[in-house]
Length: 66
Image: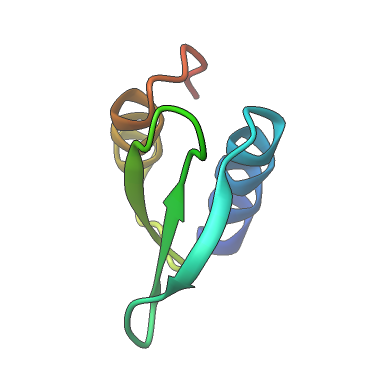
């Protein structure tokens, strides 16, 4: 699974849970926020591992894992 594949899957899950893109925080990161809970997560566009993807989803309060 490539770096961009993990990014796409994490973004799809965040959108399914109503997260919205706030802004690009640097050359390779995005900031996503939930409008109700106000939880924010930083998502690297080039994710290196499933562990990173799982940590992002855990921080977002989403129960899905890879």
